[in-house]
Image (spheres, rainbow, N blue to C red):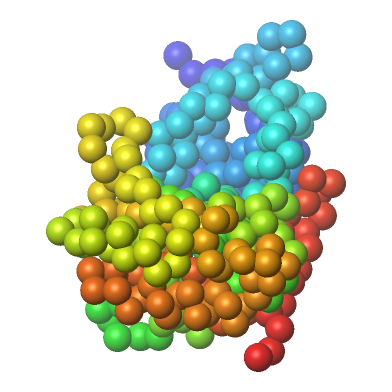
Length: 342
């Protein structure tokens, strides 16, 4: 038996109150189920921890001031159990909020509707960037024609889970921009990357982009590279990791440690089926004289020495690549940093 007019109006009024939680309400996604009597809406709630389009079911009830529902995320089944009817959600930690703010700033300023190919980095910060891209695409602010090139298996899953088109370097197009995180960045935007083990593919995608933009929280910015991060990830061929380790320690000092997996027996294996050596450089020649002497020139020389070793695939030292960086701050602001010309 159908609902009466009064009940329908009451439910529509309740939907309208939920819509005020968001800055933008758009029609319901056709891939999700519609309620036969009322239907559902999408809420883009940018000011809370809800960063994805949320499909709200029609049947609502309130208890103690809370509106309970189970939302459906695009391609990413997740459950957000509650959003307060006052318009606030479970707050993000200062670090996570800083990551989100940096990612949003970079996406809003560097991913444009007229672009064709965008590189998507790896790590925890880029998750917020992909969420922002998905929301802007659903809102019509970014065209569905834009393809997104992943730098890792994680990045590929993020792209597909959010319903975005996959691209690849096989298409022969130079990427318009690549957005990626970092483990540490100095004032010249020399970077250490590879804490997540994706450094080789990240460097390739960034190199073949017209613009490389870094996003990070406030902990990742340092006056000199190596003051906050203690090692350089290095991707090596499995058959060569022992001699590569010995050569690094002999020529440069420090210690090169094979990275071991946390949830499996044995070493970490990259997307390229290689191993990772983490070169701890604090006691190496690069740090002679203290961190204040480790400028871009010294890091460049060290990078060249490492790349000259047979069996070493790539290093996590990124020099003269990033052109702009956004660092989210604990107070909610975002600091911008442009690379200095060389």
